Length: 329
Image (tube, rainbow, N blue to C red):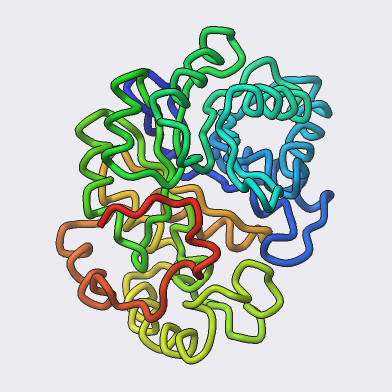
C-alpha cells in the first residue's frame, strides 16, 4: 500500500483509508462483530488510516474501534481521525464553543481508549463563532497533548485560509468523486497550495460508482440515501444508466468500477486521500486495488470522457442535509 502525508508535518497514512461510518446504521443495520472483523481486514491489507466521529452512531463507531484496540492490549497500528461539532439538539445542531468541544473530545478519547487522537476535525462549523476562535480551541487541544493535528470538514477555501493563518491545518475533509467535483472549484487547489491534505469521503459516490449500484428499493432502506436527491426517482434510474459506460470502461481496463473510481481520485492530486467505507470484504478488496492502479493521462481523459463534470442528476444533498456544509461556488 502506498502512503501519503496528512499535511506538511502530519503522519504518513495509507493512500486508501477507511471510513468507519460503516460501523453504524447509517447505510442500514450494522453488526459490531462484523465491524471488529473489518478492522482486522483493513490491517491485513495495509490500511492505516481510520476515520470516525463522535456522532457516528452517537459514539458507537468510536466504541467499536476502542474495543478492537483494547483486545490488542492497547497496541494501535492505525492513525485515527475523529470529529466534533454536530449535535442532536434540534435548537442548536452545531456547537463549536470550547466547553462543548472539550467535553466531546474527552468522550471520544475515553471511547477510543487512546491518550491522544491523531487528527481531530471540526465536523461542521457553527456560523456564529469565527473560525479563528475555533482554530484556537483546537490549537489548545494540541498544546494539551490531547490531539496531534487539526482539521475541518466541508469548509470553503476562504475559511481554510483563515484557519491556517492561526494554526497549521493538516487536513480538510470533503466529498469528492467522479460525481461530486465541486472541490475542484478552489478547494483542491487551496489545499495543495497550503500543504493541506484533502481527505475525500464517499469517493465511490455512495455506491453509484461500483459494479453493483444501489437501486431505489435498496436506497429506500438506508436512512441517509432514502431522502438523497440523487437516489430518488427519476434521478437514480438515470444515474445508473449514465454511469453504465464507466462500469464498461473499468471492465475493459481489467478492473472494477470501485477500484477505478478510487484510482481516479488518487490521481487528481498527490495530497488527496480517499476514505471509502464498506461492510463487505469483497468490496474492500476492490477499494484497496484502486490504491495500486497506475493511471496515465490518457486513462484519466477516457474516464472523464464517460463521466464528464456535471453528469449526475440531482443534488448531492437534500435541503436539510445542506445545513452545515459551506458553499463557495
